[in-house]
Image (cartoon, rainbow, N blue to C red; front, side):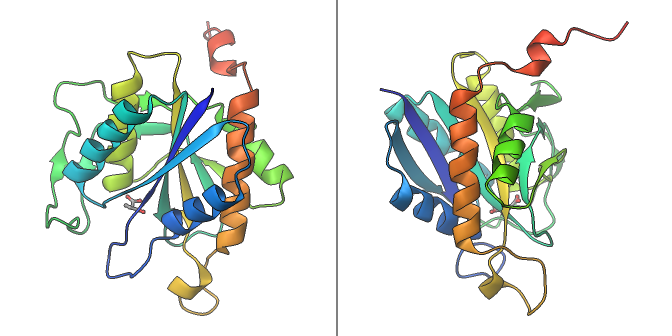
Length: 212
Ligand code: PCA
């Protein structure tokens, strides 16, 4: 049976909740299959998140992995296109670690692309009525580092698709009028995105060739 692993993050930056975990919980409550959905929460820790993600992948042997994080100052879901091999922490993680200008994985490639069909995923979210964009940067903090570690780990397993999605903060997390998204809408977006990732077999990048 097809198995999907979806992760959210725990709270960070003085917050008591993380919108990504709220959305992932709601997604799990709504999921009716037929694929098996496994959800986990990762700590906002450079070291801990990638370790726990590696364990979760080893335990669940998923066919599709989507990590979800929270992004401030946006009201649209961001389907991330690329993970880069650098950390430049603006604030310490939950372990007090704040690396600046260090690689996520020393000696590894500068970047990895998402292996999700990002345009098809974004189109599906838009069709579900939720604001969305394809994002070209996942930042330089724990989300990007976790995304990079995920793509690095699965680069040797081309049969497993994986990527990263940022969801906005919830209205309860932000000042009145500041950019946010209801948890319900973020869960709707994740549901539509998973369906698109499962049903889209053609990845345009693979068939497009190169520019002369
Ligand atoms: N957002 C942060 C880390 C965890 C999260 O939910 C980020 O974008 O890096």
